[in-house]
Image (tube, helix red, strand yellow):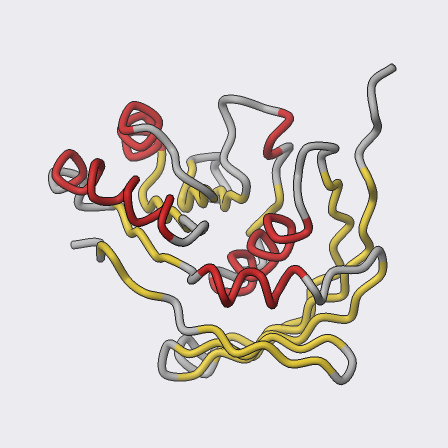
Length: 181
């Protein structure tokens, strides 16, 4: 018997001093049966880092041809494509051809570093691609914040990220492995 997704209700308040974006997003997030709390929280932080009134969670792991998060223009074009994990060079190429801006958030410590060493030379031609890594220590700390109902606060200033749920706070310093042109 197939397992169902677990529904998480999230009130995500974003204060991004770098982009001057301040808003609260009420999200209903379906956590795929194979998705870990770590990946769920990375998805929420990636949403916060790119927060916009048109940014949306997608079917994620349930759909092969969609990113985890996207932002479409009013006319339906893909403005932003956000992927988590360690996509193949083919997936990154296809993503860069579909969207104006592509952001990949790898995580997983040494595994992510080995993936990047293998992938980075093949990504130099993609001017619209950014790769931003989260450390294994940071994502493990994020996973401990996960719950079915969360009031999550994300503060961003000078590239540093503070994530808080209730009295728990996790500080994250994303590492830019590749910047868009």
